[in-house]
Image 1 (cartoon, helix red, strand yellow):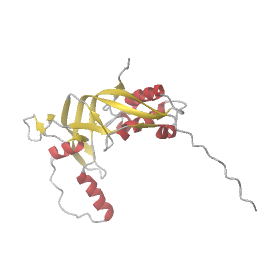
Image 2: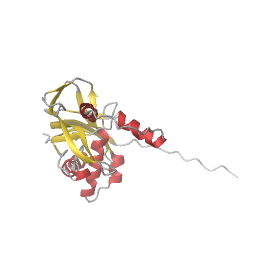
Image 3: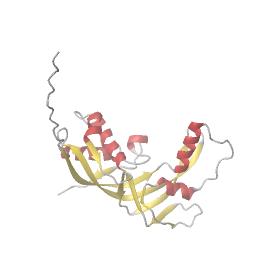
Image 4: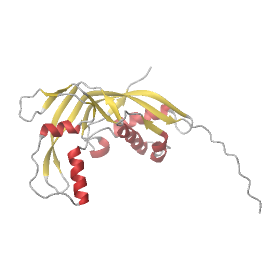
Length: 218
């Protein structure tokens, strides 16, 4: 029996392009999962968690750990209250996960006919640093206190960072054979209105925080 003919296969290069765009917003609440919380989850899943007294809450540490740090720095608490609530100076840099921005764009497909979430997941990528973070510029950082209800129905307080008057410069890579830069920019603008970024955003809790707009380009 003769061997079947092996066909030559030509691999066509992907038609990938990239562009830069800026977004800005009034307020973003950050809530990065701390190393302490991660350890507690692992201990619970592995059955090594020790039952005992609840650890003493450290509001300032919870606040600092809630931020996505791009560059480490010093926190200076300007408030006279014991907890440190209010405006805080920070001489480092804060960012936001690039995948979080992409997820907001993907989620915006719910509000657009003809574009699916599945298509967007494989057609666009937001460039971040080695930790997948996009640097944010902002005017103020606020240490805030929010009452929450945890999984067992118990009420608790959470201390998180709030960025005010923030903006970010994004570099977006995309497959130009399936979507255009103009479509992506408009989806990004829709994402800013209906989904948002961070905690207490429209797409997560129906809140008003984390909304943003695309800066007009000339």
